[in-house]
Each structure stands twice: as structure tokens, then as C-alpha cells.
Amino acid sequence: MYGLHNASVNRAYYAMFQAAIAALTKYGIGKPSDKWKHDFVQAQFAEALIHRRKIFSSRFANSLITILGRREIADYDTTQTNEKTASRTLRLAQNFVEQVREVLLK
Image 1 (cartoon, rainbow, N blue to C red):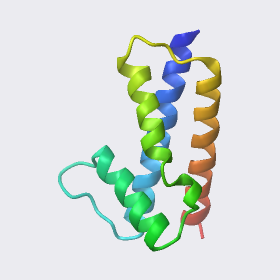
Image 2 (cartoon, one colour):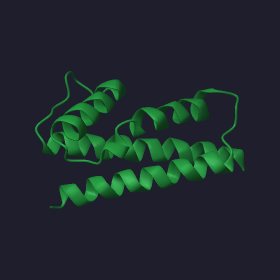
Image 3 (cartoon, rainbow, N blue to C red):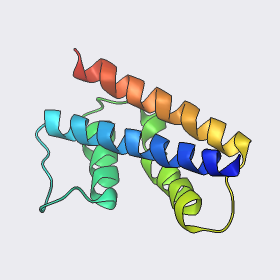
Image 4 (cartoon, rainbow, N blue to C red):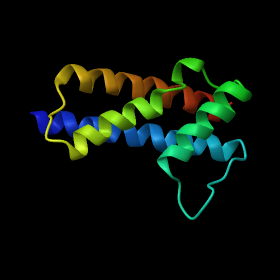
């Protein structure tokens, strides 16, 4: 069962990551090189779209970095993700992606 929790955390993070990329692209922020880097996406989403332009809720300012940490544990650590952490992660990802979706569809 833990393997499913780990996979859930992984997929939740990547849903958020792709949603953040979609938002950055919509607001004219392109990737700095040939690929989107995790630290760049997190930093630009928080700084440009939350703090500076106030497009997204400030409650999401640290969400990507928080869930990235959980994903790295789920993917690379011998520690298994428990159900409570997986559920919290999924809920945060759903809220994040839904807010991005709402903004992009305006």
C-alpha cells in the first residue's frame, strides 16, 4: 500500500509543476534554458505570479517547494509515505491545480 502513497505524492507534485508551467507561460514567463527546472518554476511562480502580480493566492507561495520535498522522499528515500501525508499532499495539489485552472480559463 505504501507504494501507492509514494506514487500519489509523485503524481500530485507533477500535476502542480505542470499547472505552474502553464500559468507562467500564460503570463509571458518562459523557461530560461532548454527545459523547465524545478527551482526556477517554484521561484518564478511564487515571486512573479503570487507576490508581484498577485494573480494567485499567497497560501500557495511555498506549495511547490513543500510538495517537491515530499516527492523527493517518496521517490528516492527508503522512508515510505504514509496515508495521512499522501492525503494532505493530494488535497493541496487539487486546490493548487484548481486555482490555476480557474485563472487560466478566465
